[in-house]
Length: 137
Image (cartoon, rainbow, N blue to C red; front, side):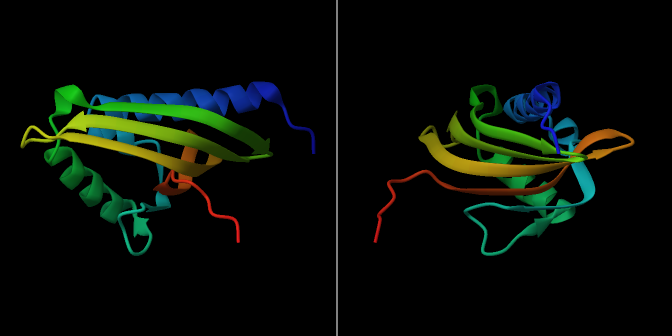
């Protein structure tokens, strides 16, 4: 299968737009990128969440942060498109001020799986984990 750079750029534009909606705390637009049956697994969760669980998790997280201070900066590491499926790998740097005035900073590695649907690219899977030093055994 031939990988088409234009498709990769298109998927990354969706990824960037997705994080832009997160940064503006526009929960409905942010979640509109997710497929109805999508699942996400955050490093703070013990198991993956369905779309409704994901909605609740994000709403709770946003409620603890001053929304005018949200900053989500994704840095692409790899984008690959295979037919109607795309996979993105990226580092995500998050910064905000909590409601109590303390700073929230998080650096994670993340991956998203996108599916091309009749309604455009939709997220079907996501996973994040803390970006820390790796110990080679």
